[in-house]
Amino acid sequence: MTRSDFDTPINRFGSHCVKWDMMETLYGIPHDRGLAMWVADMEFRPPAAVQTALQNMLDHGIYGYFGDERPYLEALTWWMETRHGWKPDPSHIFTTHGLVNAVGLCLQAFTQPGDGVVLMTPVYHAFARTIRASGREVVECALNNNAGRYELDIAAWDAQLTGRETMLILCSPHNPGGRVWTAAELREIADFATRHDLILVSDEIHFDLTYPGQRHIVMPNAAPDVSDRLVMLTATTKTFNIAGAHIGNVIIADEVLRKKFASVMGAIGISPNSFGMHMVTAACSPEGAAWVDDLMTYLDGNRQLFDAAVNAIPGLKSMPLEATYLSWVDFSGTGLSKSEMLARVETQAAIATNHGDSFGKGGENFIRFNIAAPRVQIEEAITRLQGVFADLQ
Image (cartoon, rainbow, N blue to C red; front, side, top):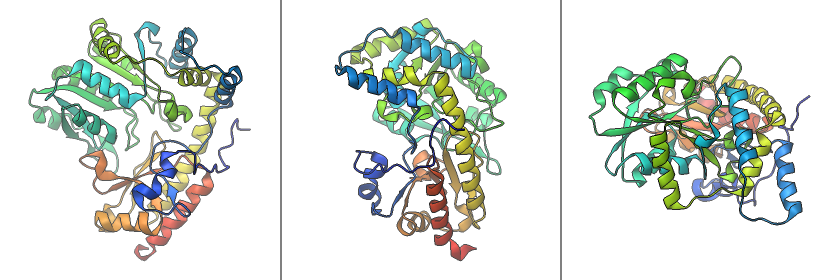
C-alpha cells in the first residue's frame, strides 16, 4: 500500500505554474492539447506531513520572521545521516533561496570576474546562465558518450585547462544524463580539482532520486581529503516536489571558505523563507522517507515504460537512467535536423520539452523529457511520439 496517490492527474493550469501556464507563451503549444514535460518539477503532491505543516501555519495565521532553526537543522542532518551516511555539522549549513541562488553566491564568494568556471557538459543549463551573468567564463569539459553512457574524460580535460580556471561545478547525480557517479569517478573528479587548484562545488540536488541497484555517494564520503576546497549544495526541493519554496543548503566544512561565503551572504542580506523552513522540517522525517521510497518505485515504472517505447522507435535512444526523473533521448539516429525533430515533438505531438543544445556541448541531438507524472500522461506522450515518428517504423 502506497502512502501517496501518484496516479491521479492534477490540473495545474491557472495556478501560476510556469511548467503549464507558460507553455503556450514559450512554445506556442495550445494549452488545451499540450503536454508539459520540460520544467523539472513533478506532477505529484508532496508527503502529507508537508501539507499538514502548511495547514498549521495557515491555522495560526501570522506569517512573521522565522527564528530558531534547530528543528530544521536537526531534520536536515537526520536526513543526511539516515539516507546518505553523512552527518554534516549543523554550524556548517547555510540556507539559500534554492540552489541556482547558491551557485550565484558561490561565484561571488570564490571567484573573480573573468575567471574560468569548469562544467562537465552537457549539464544543467542554469549553471552556464548564472556563470555568464556573473561575468565569469564558462569552460566546457565535454563528457564522453560511450555507447549511450556518460563517462569522464579526465586526460582531455587536463590538457584543456589553461590555469585561468578557479572553480568546477559538479552535477551529482548528473542532469540531464541521469548518471550516478561511482566512488572511483568521484575520486577522479576530486583529484582533478586538486591538481588544477579549483574550488569544487558539488550540486547534489538529485541525490535522493536513485533507482534500484544504484547508490549515490556524497562527495565528502568519496573524497574526505578535499574538504579544504569542497562546497556542498543540497536541497529537498526535487526530492519532495517543493521547488516553489526556493530553499536549499550550502554546506562548507572548511572555516576559511565558510567565512568567505558568510561574508557574501551577509552583504546581500539573505534570510530564510519561513514556509520553506517548515516544509523541509516536516519532509525530512520517517514519513517523508517512506514517501520517497514509494515515489521511486512509481518513477521506476514510468522509466521502464517510457524507455521501452522510445527505444522501439527507429533512430531514437533513451540514455539509461540511474537517477533523476529526466529522460535524455538521443535523436541523432533519425537523421533529422534540430528544427525537424522539434517540429514533430512540439508542433505535431504538442509536447513541451527541454532542447538538448541548451545543456552545452554534446547535447545538440538530444531532447529532455520529464517523466515525473501520472502514468496516464506518460502513456499519452508515448502514443503521440509513436504517431509523429510512425514513418520511421
